[in-house]
Image (tube, rainbow, N blue to C red; front, side):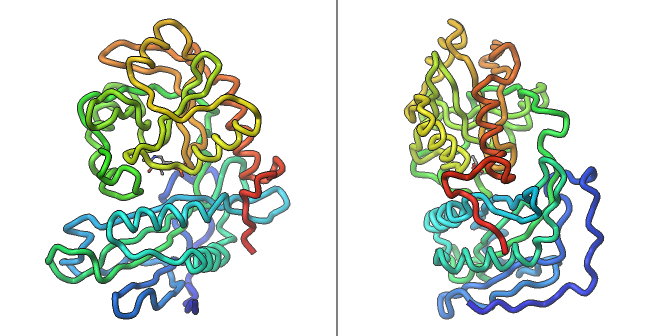
Length: 354
Ligand SMILES: *Cc1c(COP(=O)(O)O)cnc(C)c1O
């Protein structure tokens, strides 16, 4: 695919690593390409970062046709830059697109444009410990009409943001509130798709939890409010009586790449890991009888986020005395080691950006 490049003639001064937050600063360029039923994907271009201009009737503004991805480029100690399992993000984006009737992008084309874009913004990858270049590909329906139907026109964009270390003050376990009122997704709905609408629907519970001093909610299934699904915008895992348990992908859970990587890692290390239904009753019993040894969330942003307390129906249950567990720490060290190139990548997960 031909990619037009329009250079930003006023490049920004790269920020100091200490001032990086999450997703507030953007690089000098962005990638855009358009889709129409007649032309397919066309007009691939890397252009100076600027506001998008869309028609007030654009599909995304009214009917929420939007999907996104999140992955990172990491600077290794030798100065080279690498991404972590980008093909997995591309495949997931196409699954999300299929669910929302948005156009898919052939894997080789998606990989080519992602590589070209990250390569053009590579210098923005910070090198301070724990920092990275966060990549946000997203796609939205962009028909200029209020009619409700599968989209005929779409726009695909990739933006990049240098982000600071998630754990600037060290890895502190978080407090999680188990949500028994709102639900995030249901089977048959869009739970397995990474779409903006899922986030819009989960904000209310998140706000309520935050007001009570909790950092995220633990979602239960949307039908029986009985089975554990995810924690905030991360997948969740528990170590119960020596065995790791994570909710199976039932259709309402987002298939995280960090989740998948941890499962593959644990399997290779011979640690028992089971993907199955896990009910809140079973978890409550494990919290009461002391067999819940560790709990953590996992996702690209935090990698692994230890859970130090769970609150269910007003009862507070500390996990591992509020401290990070040994297995949680091991997973964090191993995954971040591979991502930043400090641990040998024996799985072939990383891809160098030239
Ligand atoms: C993105 C996301 C995750 C984590 O996926 P990763 O690929 O590991 O980053 C988990 N849950 C939800 C709802 C998400 O949007």
